[in-house]
Length: 366
Length: 268
Image (cartoon, rainbow over all chains, first blue to last red; front, side, top):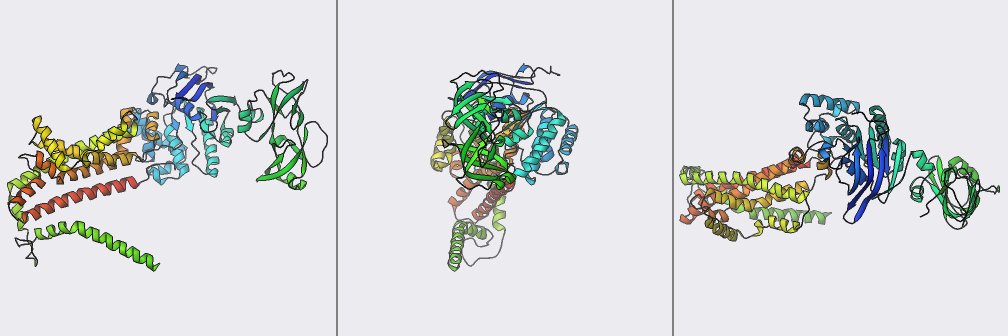
């Protein structure tokens, strides 16, 4: 059934899930559209997996409605939902061989033996594991098992695929390769992927939109870039990327907002429609990779003298850890080559500065 | 190194001694069942199948084997089914009084057999069910189900907890999942439980003696012959019983070990 493009494929309408006294998901509202790759990211216990399980029908919402293609599915049982899931543990059937695993969903739908074998084989071919069709699951490598799990979920040609941290058991190289497989597949099929993970690299690399959850609530929904550059809350600013956060009070609100913090006074060009007034408490967020560093002062606005503490080498990029005048940590990311030219000693005074347009003010400071 | 080797040697010797202690009486009976002499003495006489021929020309012995076979096969079916149901309930559900439920379902083997036999006789006589083949079956089911449950429970402990949800998620109803996922996953344990409960029922004497009445099982008839006089037929029948039971038990072990040694969890 075709849906109106404006109508979301999935709708969470003020959905709450309680387990006894704990609230795992706290009144979330979320729209997921046809054909998008949406990631739900957050620390463990933030409610991301519970959200996914409610969509699959494995948990029943305590309050609120979940709609799939415009229909309320709160009372539809798991087996009648057609929301296949790729599990963190993969949950392949160990007593069935590869092709029988893939055929399972078709068998449950009463597809004839010859047809389901053919369709399963097509999927194995598409995922480049047709050679292993008659092998036992235990004879496959982790990456191959991953592909079997994908084929098993996709064989029924669903409109939506749920993925619950499917790459967490793989080693780093394989993760990157499987990310490629997943994005390519999603583009080709044009179906909706809902991907739950706690890893920023996975969510950012693959998703059209990312949902950040914390303590059962949604903190922000935006593109990866939006979340990285414009974190909406302090939690997001701290959870995502390498952000420096300076808390202070608004002392001037003209074209540029000026704030006073224990580390000094800084100016920020606020581009949101929020109107700031003098005396507001706020936090200034400045991403570590947008900061310039030198050994002498140039007396620009947004300049601060810090003490060099250490450097952390991660390939071509280094993260410098410095201490602000009031003793807080401050991070700067720059090219390894640039840092070695500066030739810094521990304890040396360094000057950091940034453009007023690169900083970002947070409304909530809790 | 030398000391460690010496300890190892000592340990193997000790284990061997335990085996001799356990199996020597059975072996003796086995050897004398082929001995021509009427009394178990050394030196041995010549090799003979006389006692086997004698034992198995006796209609009572045949009857006993027939009863034992019917009983043990029925018991194996029922006890394995009950054991599976109990183990699955334990795996799948949490409910008030679960530990009491578990304790009760594992209790029967801890009750002394004589007491169990007596209690069974008292109950079955009262409801008019004593002295029949079914009375032996009922009593043995009570005795054997806990073994079946323990075996299936061990198997279910190895299951990936998402396996059932994965089947539902792929469109299988709860019953279909039971048939397509849980039972196949437990198959090695079920076969093994079947063999083991059959073996336990086949050798069980005390309870069968109380409730069997005229439908004697093999262990019961052995005692009856023994009470008459020393008769090497006992050795012959005993050897057959022993070979049957040990075959079933070894079979159970092999099936369980081989099938479940295949990796049971995937992904990790």
